[in-house]
Image 1 (cartoon, rainbow, N blue to C red):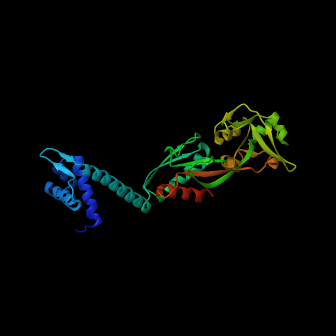
Image 2: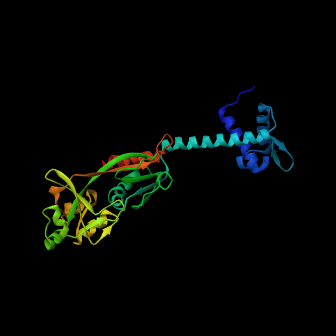
Image 3: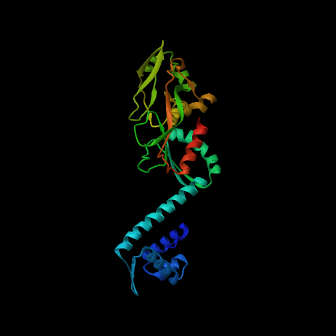
Length: 299
């Protein structure tokens, strides 16, 4: 039996599938840029090599034999695998395609979005589709390619890479403290308007460390919000005192719009930040380079 190259074999499969999908040799030829006789010769060559009839030809229709049905299924799988492999290799060489990123409102706006301009310059073939929301995107379900998550992660088949961490600081505006007084010990907060998060997992309890002992204090206030940036904005406006992630108030503390409160009692608790994604050998290069990029910048 005469051997043929892998390129010729792939071309034969392509011609065979096109003939069946198009319904005729002439239509397949027009689709592939071949003459009808070239398509016919290719089909005949496959049948001769296999020693079976794959297609029953009439003047109007092409009908697959049982062997032809089996061959068609295998041909489609092989061509699909070949396309996937080529896309993966091309993706590794020059990462491309749409990258869907989900990030929390405050952290996304303050920490992730400022990094996107340089990323776009480095990887011009990647379209970053970012959504800023405090809702949890279902990465495994296909709602996002990469999600930025805070705190303890639940067990899941997803891959998580630590990209940073943040502490928390109690802050207030100088104006608020001038009007209402500065708390000297944590228990003084009972006399202040304490602005808190409204997440289900968030309770109006702030942790402290006094005389080497950690304890929690229940606080109350007139406003709750779903992101630290909003709470910081309210604190700047003199509405009350709040406890938020350091990244939310770093610029405001540096500018003097906010000042730390009860810093001597800060327990130093930190919340880890992870990028969560579907890992494995088939992970697109656009996901890998994005996670590498933000991890290097945020740390």
